[in-house]
Image (tube, rainbow, N blue to C red; front, side, top):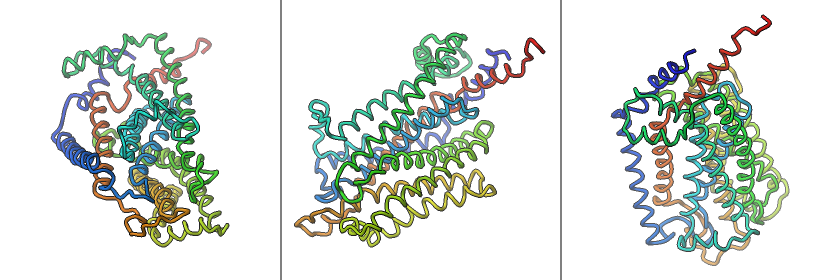
Length: 445
């Protein structure tokens, strides 16, 4: 295999993604920017008038912002865990999906914590969290865990990008702006793909993959403790840490499948993202759905069986005010993916993607049901019994900022895959290099 020619072939194959901006891409980016502009207006309105423009009140002090935070951070930790597993165990088909997973991991971890800032009524006091942290508080642990995980994921993402930066730097046929060529040269840090450099980079990447697996588990466990270490009915649970980890993996795998489908369809990458990848991801989603269903049952059954007054009030709220949401989140959101993915004949690309969509929607709604009904069922009811103080309903400001977060994620993802190929070229070359070594006859033959 002529390595130089092979690299040139790969750059030529992926160059349309890097060089051209189609009309569809421009319309898509314009649409995302429009959503973000509306969100900026909503944020200014909230900043000027305060939380009165949201549905959050004395009882329900958290709303969809905290749910979005849990959801995005869960996807990020799931992506970190899956990406680490793919690299650590050198999974054969990781080259097709590893960069998708890595980008999802970092971008989710960037977007998620922003929703926490939207929950804070006094952003001018935010710096006190860093100046006077209370080590007794799980919130302090969560800040440390998120910052550590973000730094680790950025380093890990950069390490996986270095070989591709070097390939793009060395290819003169790529028709891009000079500033991008200079940036590729800088980011490649003189990487020449020599055997010693390649071995050193693989060792560092493998070490980092093991570290981010551990960081992902620790960080999402700490997030679960913010809830479970309180005495609030519905939150004071000993299984919240593993429950959150399984839920994060469940939503993360589903989100990865959806992204795989969209990227495969839009960029016509059927050659690299094949049915076998969807089947493998679907089987993982099936396992996660079974585990998630088990943990959900284990969480609600003791509350119903114990007949404790506070737990009974919470279940009454769930089954009266949130009956259909409960059914979708904990039955449809679990059973539909199981039915689709359990039978082999149903495992088509479209059906697996549909199961992933149901799983992701059900998981978000499950997070909603963990937060809101619990806050609507306090130990001591407040004196003001107005309906808007007791029950929570998100306003257009909250929904606008929610969709702004999604739009920002999509915009950053779109821009990044126009900067570096979504399929790692270096991974393809490494895979072909390994295969060529296996086919060579040994000295004894």
